[in-house]
Image (cartoon, rainbow, N blue to C red; front, side, top):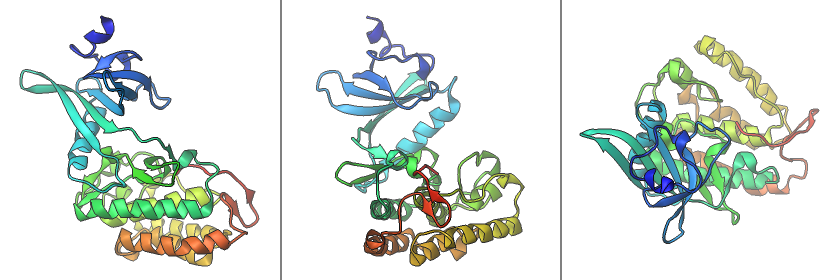
Length: 307
């Protein structure tokens, strides 16, 4: 009976949900991720057994997660590309006219994200990145900018299929970023400078992801809140040296250097063009026996890691 009560009155926070609880007709199987404050769960339909991902948050105790879930549902409702994981529905719990709790039901994808794929080869990384470009191009056509592209937001299925997740932080193109909300992660400079979101913001994120998986060494980062435009140009010069000294193909290196330029107008005009360029490079890196994940000239071999 206790499990059933959670589907009626709801928990005070998502931390109160436990395996076996029933939530909106779905039985909680396990919490996803290692963060106990993250209200993301693997669940199964109580009658049919269909697997789904549930994202749950209460307005009063988890306002940031609450807003991200609403934003993600709103964004996904307008997107239909097969490379983007869809939301099935959203459930709202109301007290009077006020929504106090939300639960997003998303399709379960039997896949691992690229940050977990230590055995993936360079050609597969570029193929996955090119596939992600297709989904992002669809989002950009709808004036949606993902804003936080990294290896953890690209799922790779056993057969090689790609699904993009993580649209809870997406924004409308033309939105001005709040520099104080940039937080951590290897984000485009305009996120830290209070610039405008465009499709080229995701071009930067995608390029940073490719380097994180293939580069074998970290690009200079940190203290982004202290950098002005000139500071970003200086940092880009250090990135360029590091990338050009790596073992990756010169054409791939040149593409990444361009995509990582601090000035969005100096990046490629569209993410579709980037995807096409990456796809053309797949045969080249597949034949390059000197190119291995996590390897750069003089640095030995490292392991793939997330941006």
